[in-house]
Length: 247
Image (cartoon, rainbow, N blue to C red; front, side):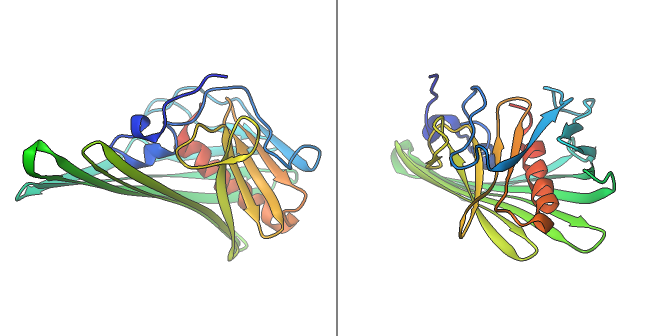
């Protein structure tokens, strides 16, 4: 099984939220533990491997169409340095729509934003201290006032040869919050700095949804997830897929 280096080698201060993407293992599709035979499967299709200004990043997700993607080519950044302390801020965002569905009438609007801040301080003897914080969020809303929110927060600090990082992920659907974790080649949850094959979403009673990263991507909606929440969950996960890009 191919492996990759852990967080210390695959993260850069330039963009903390690459914590989501840079450590993902390139491998075959792995079904997360607890989903086989108990889930609706939404395979992605008609998805380009490319991203960028001139690329149509729309794709099918089961009976849905992820489309109307705007703003991914735009970003802003600024930096300043005072008394040996350099601070860099970056911000970007995009919007999309989730359409179609089994009824053909589904229409959700998603708006996503990514923000990061990196602070580098020069210490004695040529040593520097680096700290970074990032936040990615997506808000999906429907015409009938239902809403889903995806939140991903990361923190990183580094001094000399030692460092640490943390990652917090969650999805809230109509006020009910679910925890999000990564899973490995055995379909089991792993820490933030380990190689991973996808994301799983769990509630108080167990698994409710998952995203497999192997191209072009696969979404599982567990039978445990209440039916009224399934399209909202699908929209939030679609936002994550667009943020990560095809693997």
